[in-house]
Length: 367
Image (cartoon, rainbow, N blue to C red):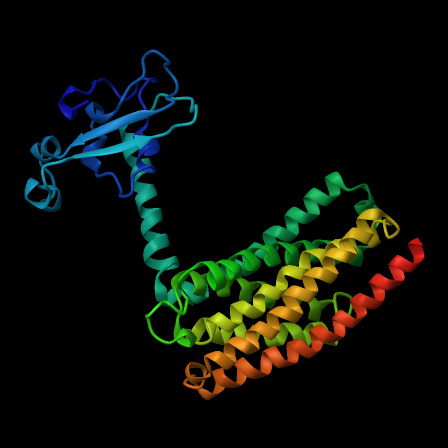
């Protein structure tokens, strides 16, 4: 339907689609001129909702209405912009044009704030770290709330057990997040691909990879703070060492842009964290002799074998194949690339030995 033939009417009528709903479906913001009531599509038959609407914007017609220079016809080709808008059964409430304009203004200001400040390249490391810390607080509170409602055994725990229960909720959510991002960036995206000709693999980064590292760094800082505050209830010296190594490595890769590929390879090892936490949950809930506990033990064994043993072998093999590129890193980055995976490999093998002993002990009790 051409712009000139679109139905008109007062925007206060409830059957009109609010323009701020349509705005989010477009790839670019809607100019205030678009808020004319003749632009809005109607559905008098339903009165409240649309299943699908096709909006045709005639650029020539819009330019005839005047406006800023960048919206004049000389800046556009003669064409129709076609967008399919899918709207889920929204109830339309009568609103004034002034209110709609205010909503659009606030929405555009929020987008500018996010894009120009919070997600601006120079600020991504800092905003993402802060976001990671705040996310830890949010997940901690949600874990406490959900557990108090749905898990009867939660109320019978001691204060320190409830704190650890909630803390393990944080680490599980972080592990899932960073596992997904690491697998995507290392194996599925083209960022670190050998077929990508955009510079040395050891110096490649992107806003997404930097942002994800910032979220992870925020988690490690928050978790280390809790470990120190309640030491040694939430973990002993090995946990402190693990977190310190992680903080130094992630912070260096995030701020310098060096070695992000190998940092993400190491972070894939967080795959084992949800299983380890589930084992603690089952044990705390008195389900140590359950089938679920046994299955979880087998899953932990397999996940640890692949994510913390075989994967680290692949990491060192990758460093060997790309040593000419690795050798061009700064001295501090080169030191971290070799030192951190080596120390974590020793720790992983020690923990793997304990996992094997624990699995053997559990299987022996069930025979």
